[in-house]
View 1 (cartoon, rainbow, N blue to C red):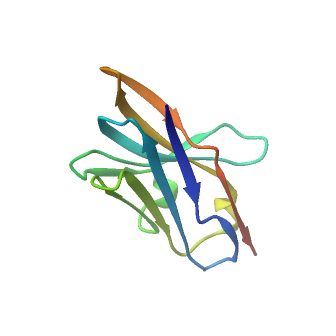
View 2 (cartoon, rainbow, N blue to C red):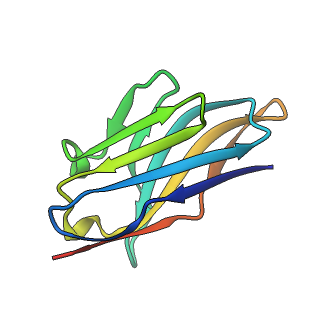
Length: 119
């Protein structure tokens, strides 16, 4: 059994910062790509940032230069540092990871954490 648990969401004013964290736990043999997605009310879930096991990262155009994704392979964690936040960043943020479990790669999601940016 594998769980992804996010933390760090909250309410901040525009221009502020938040740091999201996600911890993967369970009988994990290895983790491949990790990512953060977000889903605003009434909209589809969208990719925010990804990071490979070796640290190569990619970002959605809307967050480039403001968000930074990082991971700690020893601790099975992935973080998202969010700066210069805007009201349009308001969404539920989800952690995602490709995890090797029982000799099979499987895709897992966290339960989500709410981020609300006030104008």
